[in-house]
Amino acid sequence: CWAEVDLGALRHNFKLVRERAGDAAVMAVVKADAYGHGDAVVAPLLEQEGADQFAVSGFGEAVCLRRAGVTKPILILGYTGVQNAAALAVGGISQTVFSLEYARALSEAALRAGVAVRVHLKVDTGMGRIGFLWQLDGDNGPVADDIAALCALPGLRAGGMFTHFSDADGSEAYTEDQLHRFQDARTTLAQRGVPFPLYHCGASAATLRYACTHMDMIRPGIALYGYSPAPDMPLPHGLELRPVMTVKSRVAVVRDLPAGSCVSYGRTATLARDSRLAVVPIGYGDGFPRLLSNRMDLIVHGVPCPIVGRICMDMCMIDVTDVPDVKAGDEVLVYGPGQAERAAQTMGTIVYELLCDLTDRVPRVYVDRPEG
Image (cartoon, rainbow, N blue to C red):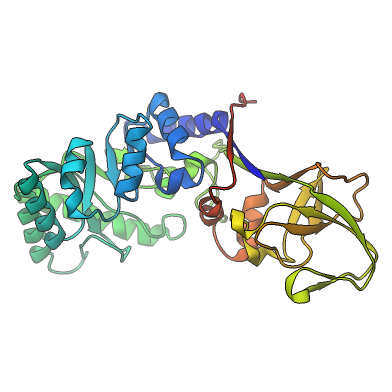
């Protein structure tokens, strides 16, 4: 099995998102190996196309981008051990700070190393994950004090302030509430003499739905890879994203089994008729979820063929009884147009998870198909 990554589709999506951003800069989110697409290829291409900055989850991912030749600023969205302060500074990598305690530890490490680390301040406006908690109706004085103290710490250089929306693909009211909290934090801190060079809060959903969230910079992720942030979130009129990844495999063998035969582990499938099954070498060891057993179709010769029995670590079986002339070596479409979304819906999850779960043993094959 293999995954085709269409660089032409990636360029197409970036162009649409860039146009959507207006005057705002674009911080391309390439964490989790560019959502499974391969950050060492995706990030340099996006830099060439005009991405202004990049966002990753951790220090190791940032190092990978630098080794791949990325020169634009990189922001680590998650936690980094303070022992990496010198490497952050030397690599020109910004670190998210989300508590005064962590900021002090990072400051001390930077001073010991004789460097200055660029940081972005994270404000929690309703995500409930990390960041300085800012309330719309409450006493934010102590929080503002902590942020002011953080910005005065030696060895740190504040490069931006940001937040993250938890339901921008769903509730407009809650997103507006979060935006108001962020704007209130921005105003309050500026009045205290604590401004920031950059303010950013819009990931893919907010970027596509709410122009008011664009501010100085947007942070598109899933939209770059060709998907709506949520299956029930319609895309703006005229915005046609192209899925970048297509997962394929081939038929290993075709077998005829009589009615009554049990198929795969646990005997969860018993054939109701004489059947022809194709064995396909893709399984949960490749990141193809076992939860799709007996619930998903793969495409052979353009025909949906149901998975029969449990998906194994390395292979699965599909019913090709009604598809003529199937033979070993025939191509099987696993995730194609609409397939990944259907698989995610069947599992009660999101496309993000399916893309990120594809393992390293699925080779990424890069193609560059022209638009149209």
